[in-house]
Image 1: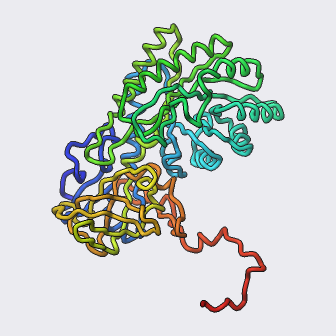
Image 2 (image 1 turned 45 degrees about the vertical axis):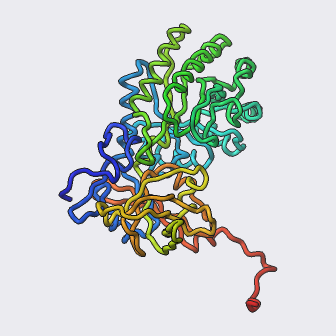
Length: 462
């Protein structure tokens, strides 16, 4: 490749805060107008692995981890730990990469917990979330010695029974709703009082008093989270003040909580008009607010924990599709369809989310038409990109949709019995398969046909 660094549809690239970019940090265009990521030509990846295909850029993933870790070291005078919110993209490769960067992990299910441990994550650096944890999930947490984020009274009763039977102590972070709202989609606001997550703040005293009498419980800290895809900084300042005050309450009631977990929520750039704060600005805001609140309430500095997910992995990923059919409705709209859609990216139909895209075989071609990119599923709402400007799109074109590293693979489904895509991790010109493509036989693997429905001679189709 002889051309300089280039990201489609954006000017300056923020190498220190990947969440502020549209494309992976290693995106380049060669002299033949083709897009490369991680030293790999996207057209070659599509030819070799097929489409749809998730592509993850290792350099961008590591840059995101380092941005958080370096910012905490620089701006926060106490101890700190970054925990990757693995719901954004859970896999063995992702867990191993995060562990190699000194990042811990938060899991919200037995599957995410087992993936983290199997990927080499130190269980001491893992926390288990969830508002309805099963017996199996709680038993796994005790077995592996991970920290449990205590979410409600029902869960407290369950843990008490389990730990009493095992004569085992468990580390707890108590989650409560801080009563802070921010401007984001209503489905991903979790800090306001009307939320399924966490104890009501008015219950905190009672929870702390009961746990002070529980020999099985070690309250190591508090947790709160205000939402996701947030561009504002002020709510995070407010959160720090609320949480430090609650830490003082916990100490007054006989606990010794050393951890303060402020969650995550920092937004990313999906389209050119998005302008999220830089990672360093977010960390500086939170750190300054925690330090100020500790001074005000005369509390020692806690170990500061945060749980970024989307802002670590979204921009590192893109999805490759092949274009198929085209439908023109004069005076209304032109649809072009791709070989994937809502089964591999449910965010547009679920959250009305937007993305940026390009034709990776013709990156610099003039965008002379406006089209709506539809998926192949049997849903009118299966639309990935509304009214996007692209060069003339024809059957067989390759389409790259940016910033799909978060929540696409983890929320993928088999709707319409469509197999889930493969995923590759690219770095230094090498592509490593990290998730195999499902096949039709994989979809049938778990089906069981009752004996009375088996027919040696199928009935004729009428």
